[in-house]
Amino acid sequence: MWRILLIAILWTAFPTTLLAQDAWEACRGEAGAAAPVLHDCRPVEGAVDPQGKALWLRAAVRRPDGDAPLAFYVVGVASSEVWFNGRRLGANGRPGGSPAEEKPGRYEAAFPIAETLWRPGDNQVVVRMSSFHAPMRLDMPVAGLVVAPYPWPSRSTPLAVAFLAAGALFAAAFGFGVIHGLRRSGSSLILAILAGVAGLQAALESLRALVAYPYPIHGWRLIGIWSLTTIFAVLLVAWTVSRFRPQSRGPVVALAVVAVLATWAAPGFDLKTATALLVGLAISVAVAADGARRRLPGARPVLAYLILFIGVGLVFPAWLVDLSYFLFAACFLLLLLMTEVVRLGREDQKREVALTQAAARPNRLTVASARGVERVPLAEIVAVTGADDYVELRLADGRRLLHSARLDRLETELPAAFLRVHRSAIANLEQVRGLERDGGRSRLLMREGPPLPISRNRLPRVRDALEAPAAGA
Image: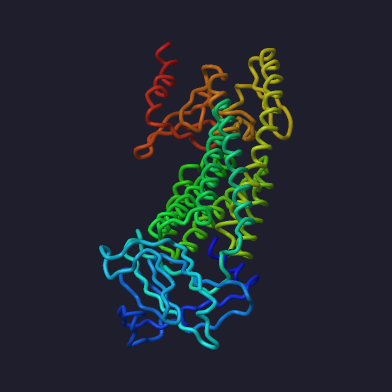
């Protein structure tokens, strides 16, 4: 993020000479009495890469227009030493021919150029670089070699945006954490972690503008950014599938984990990070689209927002993993937080009404959904499936009703004829046709609809419950 912003600001707002990779020559060299002596110089092919070696580089540069003080900037994973027209400008760390000889420098270094050193026409820049202490190899270890005004242009605007986004994300994490503490809702816990992870990444992205850290830290910073992005992508999928397709949560989340981790094979950290984020978004879009097709509450707004973000990311790819990502996450999670607070308030009101009605008619379940309230006879309920804040009732007549309630709560409120047979299913034992083994798994055969899976740890209790009527006889 900061490399793109910095170069964009320098290029558009100030007189600048940006030295491309092919402007440099790689030479053999040794230190001279006043300046290094270079020979056997050849044009650099590809990226300037000092990783695992020492390089002598030279290039010709003309003075940019304007009267502003100038400096030569080196941005990259390397220690460096710079000469300008035979005069040593300074060193960033100490480049050397081995790890023992090198002292790591900062990732960003500025070497001011005295006005008296400039000559008409071409001026020669010589750079000695080495990089032996990075935690991993990078495709582009040197991000920038540029002559530009000194000091650095202000980064207050992008920093302010990053701080505002990080603050909003941490506030959302706190809000969802409070909701989880009160309701023990799995979705609120996922969203709290999701917001915290995005907030940490916003802070990590801003580190480069706040701290002049040694270049080895840059590699760990990149790994941290990619790792936080992969966690965010998987958690986004986990929340979406728990919200709109809880019965498929295990396989879909497993697919997301494998697909997101596979992005490590992509070249370059920007591409790794962007691909990991887009993979999570694509899987979440597919799940939300399925929820919208089944007209589940909230599916359409979530689908529209996810598609909008993917569209923005494809149109402005340079901003995908930094500015637009943080703004997307902050707006998305704050909207979800407000929606969750409103929903919980309405749910409390519905629950009070439902409890009053249930006390008057104990043989029925009052189903509260987005379509209204319906009293369903308990005897007609074949099974209750789902997870988190919504469940689906399978009825004997083949209908399926979405109920705004948690499976854990219904387990305690339903009569003894209803038994929890799986983490995502409660069965009405009066609607059971039998029990069968399918390989190493057990399933309950119901009078209507597909069989229900039985968890291994719940199997003994299910067998006891099914055998109880025969034993009583």
